[in-house]
Image (tube, rainbow, N blue to C red; front, side, top):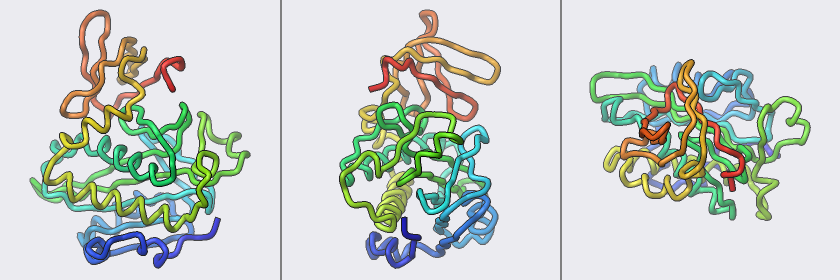
Length: 268
C-alpha cells in the first residue's frame, strides 16, 4: 500500500482536532512508536502528539510480546496525551480505546468484537491490538501513550511469523481502502475518546464494550501470574475488571498481569 502522508491523514480530522494536536511524526521505521512517544513527546510535554510509522523493529504488545510490524502493510500509531486525572482513574481507559476502534471499523462494514481487556478480533482472528503506557507527571497529571496496531493489508507469508490466527481489513471488507483515510479516522476517534474520557470516565463506554464482548457467558481460562483458573465469564464491573465464576465463587481480575483464553466454541 502507499505510504502515509500527513495531508491525507489530517484531512480526516475536524478543525478543532487539527488545532488541538501539537506535534506529529510520520516515520518510515522506528523501534516502537510507543517508545518514541514516551521518550520524545512525553518528555517535551507538548501534548497531544502523534506518531505513525510504516514499520517497527521492536513493536510490542501486552506482557512484552513482540508485535509483528511488516513494512507499509498496516497502521502503527501512538498518541501521547496529558490527562488531568490520577493514574487510578485511567485503569479502564484501554477498554474504552477498544470500543472507539470497533466503532471506527464500522465505517468499513467490519463488525469486530472485543476480547478482554482490549484485543480486537473478527471471527476469533486478531485484527488489532492496543498497548497503553504512562509516565506520571505530577499527582493528578498523567502523560499517557495509546499505541494501536491495526492490520490493513498483510501478505499471507505473515502466517510463518505470527503465532495466532489473524486477519486484516483487506480480507474483511469490500470497501476500497485508503491507508491515509483509515489512519486519520483512527486518530480522530481516539482523540475524541481522550477528550470525552476526562469528563465521563469509563461509565459511558461500558454498555458498548459489553455489546462487543465475546467473553461473557463463555468458558474461559485465566492465567494470573503463575496461577491458572477456569470458570465462566460474567462480564466486567464498572471499573472494567473481569468477573469470572470459579468453582462457585465470583473472582475479579485486572488486566495488568492477566491473560485470558476463551473456549473456541464460544467465539462467534
